[in-house]
Length: 247
Image (cartoon, rainbow, N blue to C red):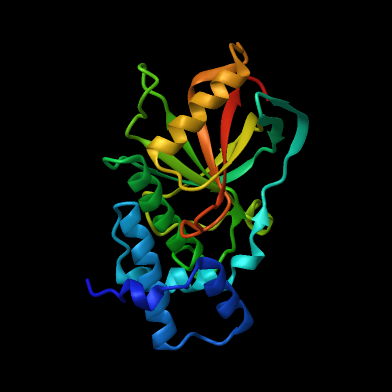
């Protein structure tokens, strides 16, 4: 697969691409389209994932609408700091989520592959045939293995449907994608910045467990990783969510 060289991409970051396209609502020309795809392919290689040329359309659409992402609402229950780490207890509402499950060799491969499928759903591969918009964060549910040093292979990645479609969800054309109803969830969230590979996530999970100590109301073997920005943002905002037993 032919790629633009790193020299061609020098100084080109995700925010600049977003600004260029947001400022220009007209369709991108072939040069900018190729440049955007090459940028995402370079990011994908960092996660050991191939971004195929057919992702060009969804990538363009998502980038063009990057400033219109709808934040997932929540109610803050409490917030405290311990050992330099800020934890916030929140309740997220019941609603419809779009989910897809991946079981790749590496955690970052699973979330990257799943997100590309969700992108295609958002960008016309649905029963409306149009761009749906999206909410942030995108959340991946992960199972911790018994040794507490590794993750299960199966990762479910999901996003909350925008308010416009909560009552009448579009049908996915991809049979691997499912729209599910979820009850309210109560989480304990902690923010971190940077990449979300298995090493960095495991380190954050371990640190949060040390801060919380033993809490019978927190599930011990399941957590979520919430991502707020595009994969190419070097210091993107992420959160670890520990799930509480009762919302």
